[in-house]
Length: 320
Image 1 (cartoon, rainbow, N blue to C red):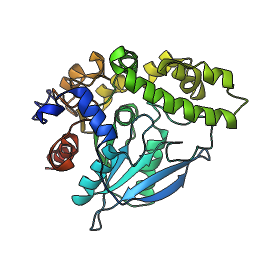
Image 2 (cartoon, rainbow, N blue to C red):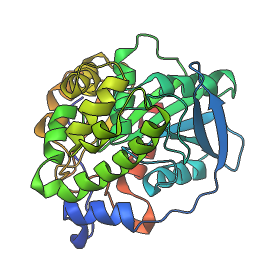
Image 3 (tube, rainbow, N blue to C red):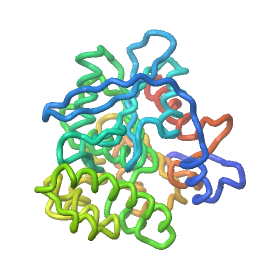
């Protein structure tokens, strides 16, 4: 599809990408009642799923995936879930392994291209819960996971009707380089602190796989992916991980209608993260590039974000 002309116009003071990103991450609040379900995975590990429901019984479900070091209670998750619940759609807000407040059981956990757990949740929703209409919504890292899943598999269940990816680093190495720039030092250091703190706990449980000296050697996000992410998940190094896990290469194969919303003033994204060519050459990809929005900062009226309303509109469009 041709690139979609965006209509997003935030209040003047939120046109600054840094301001909209920080406000959305630290200030925004969304109240939502959730019920937790723990499922056991085929490798013996577990996933915690936080459910919220439509007032009326429905066969429709949206599965939400969070960003790096996020969780199911982040406002960008509860905001989408609440809006969809209000429009007759149940929601699963996934917590990646180790992100629900309890360390996961295995040495490996999650990464930007790890689609196995998404597939497990989809199968759970179909086989055990009976949903016949499923939508996928990923934020940042979660968006990359969804697009990779939709493009790498030739056996997407027929119940999966659409994908939405917001503020998505379609090229992981390009995004990595952006995060290491001075402009993003605040965000880089915040991510790194959380990752290293979690890794120290994991190191204490798996001392035969990782030394404390190796953990203490991590000074950047690239270091983290070299020391832990790549090794734990079977890649040669960080660059091999970025290359094989980026969704960009999988976009031409997507056969499920998919909406990508990446703001042009998102400081986390490199030029390669705006897949214009891929969108123009694949009728199933709808690419929207608002001038504003920062990283997951699409602030709009009544505490309902623009990307949340667009996701709902997109599903109405493809179902019409």
